Length: 259
Image 1: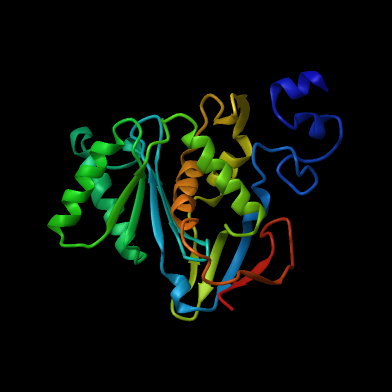
Image 2: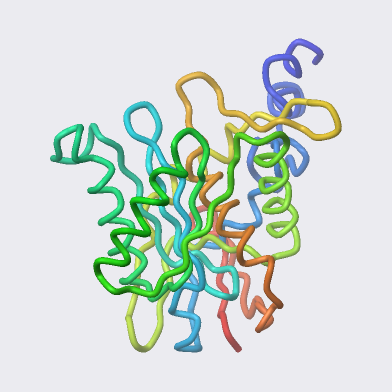
């Protein structure tokens, strides 16, 4: 048991206890309690909830990925985008202007007037580039930044996201439907699930440190934490109510948002 715990938090539960990590069978096995957030397909009843209150961006170029998240005022993830230099047909020197244009289009598509980005490792220069691009297009979109390289900041926003998930205030559907838009599939949900599952939590002073294993990623986790950091600063406008829970292994249950 001690050996399994040294290799991975919660692995003892799986190997010796017969409980599958990342499910309700092993609720304390993960770095944060993420399982509750993945709710399968949901219905959105209010047109206002089809619009993003905030769009967040964790930035990456070669080893890491850019990850954009659009979230409604109710804490429902409406859309995601994920890519890096190896996956797009642009020259290396044109990559960051391309990212800025793609992020602006993503925000416009989902109707958000607030953008938050990770300003660590050159993100502050990207924020300046982004503001210039918005000004040229005469778009009124507020750009804010969170420096996750500052002491304890990444831990703070990830822990806040974990608490929101536990309270049912942050939902990640595989798809959502509404009268106006029909059925919308949320991309990259399985990649995000894997990031949450493999997130590593280690003691570090007064706070824990959150990292990913070698060869892994946490771009989606950070992007969601950035979005929640903005959303949590405003009052809750509506109550998210589960109206049916036909849970299955594939979809996680049914919800209606905005009633």
